[in-house]
Length: 95
Image (cartoon, rainbow, N blue to C red):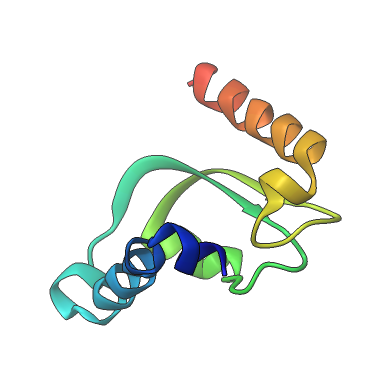
């Protein structure tokens, strides 16, 4: 209803369409992301890759397994999310 009232369904779906394209492009899929990356695994997230897979594709500088939360963790668990984000920032600052 919210998307319909605000006419934002198309822009909200674009993220999913672009993500699907990225994931299916063989030229892009094989490239490693060397930017230091932080990954937070929430138990109710829709998709969760094993750490080993994530480290193949990305330069994982920070990894956290969190006890609560899901796809909208910043709204569902704001204190937990904020603490985790600060922990990741500390890791980046120490590099």
